[in-house]
Length: 284
Ligand code: DGL
Image (cartoon, rainbow, N blue to C red; front, side, top):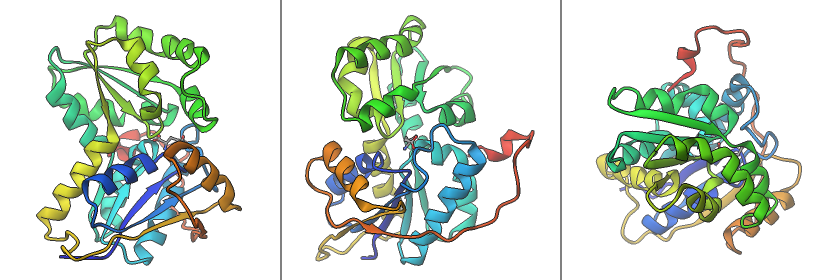
């Protein structure tokens, strides 16, 4: 048993979908959630920058004594999963592996679609995990405008539907029967995505799958919170003001995020990877 909090990290507010799933599945677990609002969004940034920002935030969580790290951001998971597992002693859970496993067990025809940020799709992290199994065919699309819509609180307008049609028609036409929502924000657009893809396509989202993985890893290590533990939730942001985080978080999640504290990350120096040819070394 271990009553220390779980550390959850995202580029901003999107990872709150994962935090919400952890709260629902593990009501006795406390967590510290950090949104790296100083550097958000990650989706369009060079992978080497995302990697550095992410490790800086994870360092602050480890300094706060968390028992586990959850990288609740697809772009960050794609950029630095391997580094995180090498750098920290506490277990690291990320969002890509759990979604991949669910998609593999869901597909019937072996044709799987993945949507995500430019960074996530460009990293090929999902494609590489799926393509270990040669029977699977993977079709991808980067959907950068989806994050903009969600952060503006726009989820059900005709413009969202038209954009979804543009992004998703090639995947639908390719005959995928399973679509991975490979970005923290996309569960908020489930209605439009599902409408465009049609009833025959199963949507897999990282939030529930990742929470299930957190449970699995805690059980395996005998690290679940005790049966008398009373959960507490701490929210932190790295940007100049907590207000932006709070407003957006409450718009997306309902009024459950309060007392957001500002934290500063340390600056770490990593080898300069610009122009680095061997992108395999960057993949999980
Ligand atoms: N959290 C990011 C992800 O899941 C989306 C938002 C961003 O671009 O920072 O990829």
